[in-house]
Length: 186
Ligand code: FE
Image: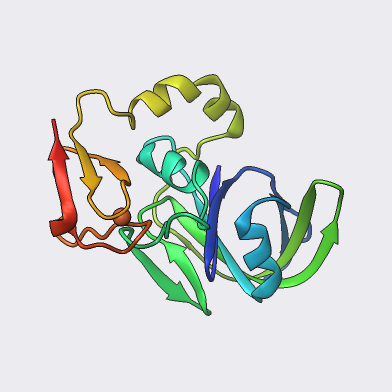
């Protein structure tokens, strides 16, 4: 499992494949055409893949995989850095930064092919496979759901964020309201 990021878009992906070797191997990633990230991938020349680990916060799967940047800015409360003009999410096992060199269109997905220009390993912990995600989807989602957590509701747009405490620099990912605009719902 990977978090694919590019300027203006990010989503969870699993169909990542190394397709050549050498110092700057080619890597392909398949992205659904209906995803907003697909649109952004067509516009931009660089993208990054952050490697999601078994011990990484399952909240990120829901955050990056189950909402669209059409509705919410997924980066707004996350720690990331810009490398070669592309956002790279921090705190995962490592990342790859790629320069887009080709695209192949299919009926449902676009295959984006990138040349590796930078990579970093942060941890040697086990990465999460798509198979593991599918087999443990329910418990992974449960860990991020409303159970035992306080709901914080944005009084401007109605966005709900589940956490014990709202981070001090929290901003509504949907409408941009600051944390003072959120009310606690027990
Ligand atoms: Fe809001």
